Image (tube, rainbow, N blue to C red):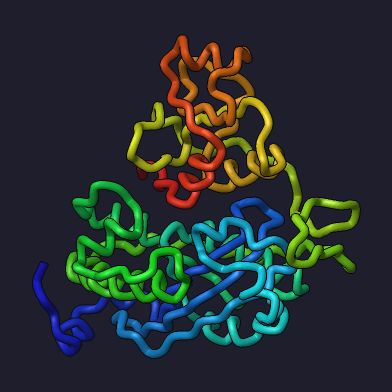
Length: 324
């Protein structure tokens, strides 16, 4: 790729490109609808991708912190952190008027939108850009679509994976050359609309740190109506590769996360929830693969890949966009 200085870049920059970006990363208590943000970071970039400033905060999720082994934030650390409504205005000021950029942006946007909905407000974001989708538009030769692979491609060194501030820094540094490559080739940026959520409870019950949250009568929750999956089935899941939108995912047995919530998260990621296992099923999720349920038996007979819940929730963090 040709190295461009800022004057050359400004002269050839597509007029339709946004004038500013907010590169965001959030760490959360989990992946379900009632999970909460425990830390957030924003790097503000100008139209050419140059860093203007950055910001980071812990957030008290008012519940168990979830996978501490991933984000490293314990209940003791989060106990004295501000609640989301206390940092909502500062967060919003850093997003205002900018395109939200994130790696698997749908996940970050949905978590942020839900937090603002609980606070009876809305984030000032109208568009988002997923760096996974941009990498695909640029046909970058990546072995997979993990952040670490994108960083390695551009020579960006990760220091603390799953630390919101470092992940946002890494993504900002990798986004700038991606943005320049797109401008140089006049590649369309994969911008998507962000629609703020508008449903919340007037007085939601919020458990404190140390107690797992669950849905109760009157608690905040968006509509549960599920539209049909809009993407074609790309086939079976392949080991060491990301899930792809349109894949058919079946579930069997008990899960630690409420099954309906896990299925909701599956649908939100652009996957299809399959009620049974067939030759078209892409993946079976079960915490008891040796059980003799009809789904596990069929999965074995069809050679359908099987993963446990923990592995699946990690796969949900990096779902690859459907082929355009």
